[in-house]
Length: 544
Ligand code: VG1
Ligand code: CO
Image 1 (cartoon, rainbow, N blue to C red):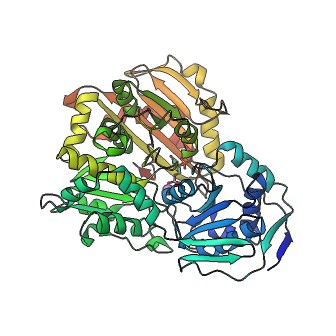
Image 2: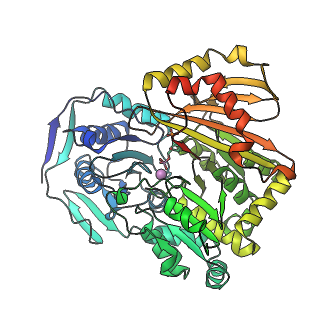
Image 3: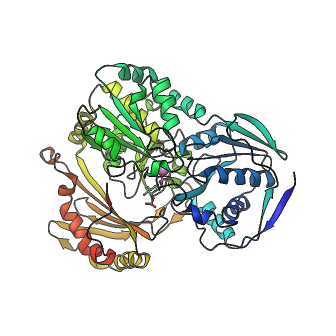
């Protein structure tokens, strides 16, 4: 087998976003588009000769093709070994687990997460470092720089490998090992949680659950862990056969897109617990019977109940949340007497805190929760954490959440997304806000007075790196907040995200509807940012 050096020319649009490079499949099908980016990843790295690379993806359309290309390029570039999930499948948290367990140099994950899949859908690729986490900005910036001047890439001339048979084969001098996609991850989960206790809960006639894989990557993981190892009946799983087009769905586990599950949990004879995961298995949505747990509350509640879980019994080092996530977890950290950290959006910002042992649990409002067991957010981990807490406390999801609010007060929280907005208009909106910071401070809107207005900037407490322009915050004197950000994961136009939060200590008001409780702040947001005028939309596309 010989190594072919192919000349190529740069593409101007290969800047990684919040979580890697995401584009339409049709863009990735442009000749050399994928190859350029993969070679740029390799060219940004040093010292990987003879080392191990982990490769896997969420199984969406183009996954298999991309993996064959990456295997041949990794071999041509001198990796010693490549571990690839069977059928090209590794959920994002499973990939992180495998990278860490086998001391790999790094990994390449193919996914566009919750974005729709199929021939006309999206595809994505990202690089994870040896700690199992998404490459920090220093590396993604270096990759982007290289994409702008790349002139050639290396690929082995070889036929495609059989990705469906577990075992080793050779690609030139490189060993390729096809591994079971689920086994290492399932074993890790078993080491963290009290499986015996969860088994008893699931066997009880008084408890039932429903998990929705949304036709994406988590199906086989849920089957192995929830059914085979924990004894849930097969009927507890729905949409758990992964499909290349995700069944034409939008595997984003929220009340809008996970409607199959929502119908079950809000229907007749609803189960006690419901959960869904996203395309690549790193997000989670938690439901009780006719009850929705907001992701920010979920992080706070898991932290407050961590002592019920074997892996976290010894206490938490700290809790980290992304800036737009509600401040509910901070209240738990304060009571536990541990540090809380506020990072920019995107899991890559948690890596240093986890590596340095400063944070144990991390979370984002976007249905992402995780811990130091891997370096990605982890959907099924959150499901198991909740099951472990339910098994230990023998209370309903709703009772646990309400008790939490009684103790800590309730942070009402909602995110409004305006998807597919014209990019120029979205930028105008953000720039207008930036120009208003000084005049906003001290300004009064009804009951609310602005305490501060700024553009969030983060200095990493571990390596001192600085990330500017991470979202516009308007904070009020009573701790309420409005945050504006433009999405960094979309593939069409711009997505404006408006995040709204208020704090309510009064128990009598805890049962208010969230949108009702936040109504005034939502109106203030529109008044300040002229959302309706500038986006040309009367309403958000998605409210979570
Ligand atoms: C979104 C979420 C962010 C999350 C990111 C990747 O980013 O807001 O919290 O980390 O998706 O999640 P953005 O830039 O579109 O707001 V995943 O599950 O899509 O990998
Ligand atoms: Co995801």
